[in-house]
Length: 297
Image 1 (cartoon, one colour):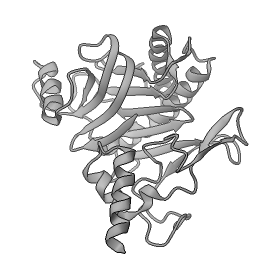
Image 2 (image 1 turned 45 degrees about the vertical axis):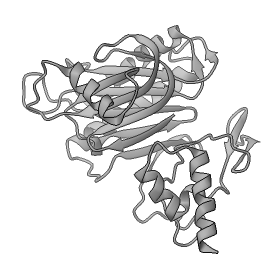
Image 3 (image 1 turned 180 degrees about the vertical axis):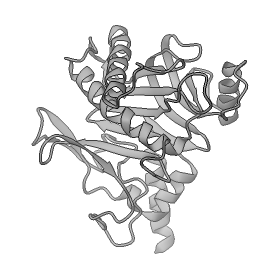
Image 4 (image 1 turned 30 degrees about the vertical axis):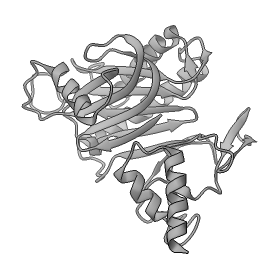
């Protein structure tokens, strides 16, 4: 899975088995998921055509699921909980009043799910959204245009997606925490110039941590002058043994991908290249680095 923002649209790319409650929602195999910002006074008559045009402009296959929102993408919240990533934009203006009033949630798993598990993940995310709104004192359980997409990659490993499963627990926690954070950004209570990234940490007790590039206390974590645009690698886990290795987890059962010594995306030239060409493959970036090293000789 790869994701990036281009203008007013979030693109998530890969080879997914997914289920969507959004525009033309169904369940199937797709290669792109997008969440697009539209003006508040946008004409709602042909939402499908707008998504088709956006996909066509990028040159992507029409195998996609898409969502629309009036929330600006700078208010997007991305939450990573082990093998689960959740993307949330949220506006909760009361229906009929001016302003954004849509909560869009996209769930992605690096581990495969059955179709039943995908559908159950949508239920789990919705349950967590309802509890999040209740915790903030809202009297409603959602808005009239809320939508959820659940997607996965890989061989089926998870049969169910309820709150007591490995996937469901992570999805529930991420949505419960993420919806209030997204609403606070949309309403200006928390101000960020760019989308927000959170990671679930178990160090010092389980909690969510927001990564903020400005004044990072760990800089430089690799070398002076490094690029921090991709502090959390979009290729993780890349499984490229020239860049990392599998190690036993010290805080959870099983193995985790350790690439702490990899500096590829911290090379300023490589980071600039990936920002310009977000579809670039890992192999392409490694070749680019070799070319940069030859030029420097």
